[in-house]
Length: 425
Image 1 (cartoon, rainbow, N blue to C red):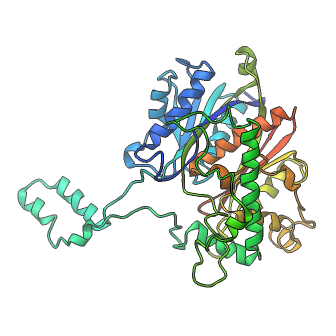
Image 2: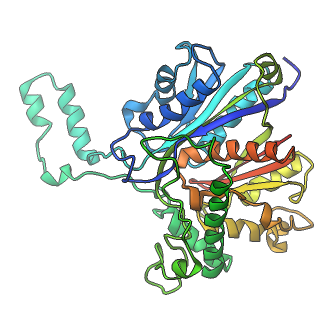
């Protein structure tokens, strides 16, 4: 139990990521999650087997999906006595799930497990107003007719107006896009640079599809095999014509639908195990999950909402005695092109590195040809909780095809948090 074991990444699977309210409209998070989970189980011949843990989650889910992970396990083909854990960490959900499973394997608590995530904006929990909900609770607890009638005393039809979920921070009232627009202004990130990164993401996704990189990662689902946010015909001219999506009035808005990740539905999962388990079951190891951590910033008073990765990565590098340049691949989640560019600018800023990180030297730059080489969230899509394991599976495959190497993952999340990890072989 005292020996820390290597954690092997064996295989991942996901469904095509589709724009919300299009192809997956009417499907639940459970429908979406079970599909890649069941396929992963089948391809690894895990039917009827007991795994140590299945950890997954969703950002948007109904109250009746409180046991989503466990219900998905029951539909997956795994032994019904496989335990499951639900968790939620916004856009970092499935990477956090990966860390949870990996740590249990590393500590010898389990031999194998599956991490995953799912989200849909096409089936969101729409609520009544708080006042009307309170009336319904009073009605359900009423023991007499008079008590039932009292529950609706002073009722106003406006109470029936639904409350539709919004991707906004409770403490600031701002959406991620609005917050990132402020970050872009703070760091002087130009519209041109954002559009260029968005174009590059689409071009690299196109290359990935053309060479077949995504073929075994993305399963066919509901007649689709390619991500619905993928736009191989995108040009810089088309991107430059798009209007600002968040700052529409100042004349200085730079974030558009083209350089921001689209609202997306999808699910992904990855199988992890110990080296002993891989050997005993004759499983090919793509890469090893070395370490993952998360950090948070005070996004209300001190820092940009999506700037936490700028702090998380340096902390991880210090923990592992690494430099920012000591990686063969970088998978930086493209929530917005501006977020990626702000993070890169911070790492190369003397003021930031010295003033915020307490470093004597800047972290420096990364080789852009090593970043998101088969596409990122701008091109492949971003179902909030599914992005982490999409990245873990893709990065492990890149390292395997490269004959080894190291990869760095960086993901920003709502709530001013950042999560980062290292994969290597």
